[in-house]
Length: 277
View 1 (cartoon, rainbow, N blue to C red):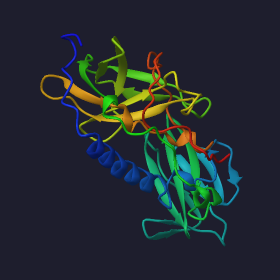
View 2 (cartoon, rainbow, N blue to C red):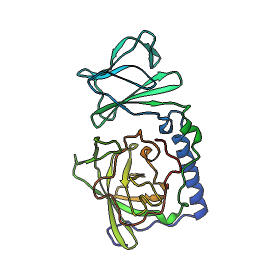
View 3 (cartoon, rainbow, N blue to C red):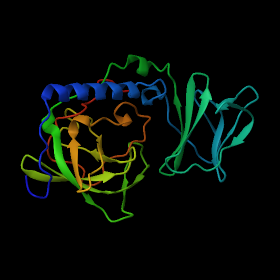
View 4 (cartoon, rainbow, N blue to C red):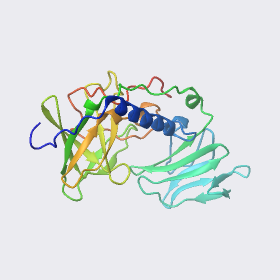
């Protein structure tokens, strides 16, 4: 280890480490299988200026200068925060990253803007894919994959544009800096983005396992932000699949340029056994 990277912390007891990881992964799977989570998504419908109807979605939808709009037939309605919507509704512009959720019986209808494009995405708790899901395999938890590192801060206002699992869509993220760590005697760097909870960094990456034992497009790792000296821990055991690993109806970001490691990160979640198309 060079003097540019934090010294390795004392290795925790392997049994305690595995137990803590199992508790975390169980909670992560529980969130993934929420009745209105991504495994319940049944479609991805893009809005355009020309009015259109979509399977299983009430109303005729369009994207107008004032924002997304819907015209509901006399026998159609939507719920919005307890209010019953009928007739013609214009919802005003949605900012990139913003979503509005409508109620339609057990179904939640998501209206969202990602990268400047607006879409509808139904989430049905009775979706057969959600009922059939049996869990995501993962590499055994190993403390050796909790690597010491540091954050090399970026200039204020730095951002990065990345591609998406949805063709024609791009995401823009603020870049707090580059995370540097060592593996197998070599220094590696990953561009970090602000995409998660406050005080955390998100690493979107691919590696030599991608398309072999892990999902081909990407994985995501959320890590606590650095201490006052810029030190942090990159625990690859907590690398997870994004929704695009499970469904064609996702708009997940792809890794930034340079975030494709030439080493095998044999830690974290592996390729899902099930996928909805």
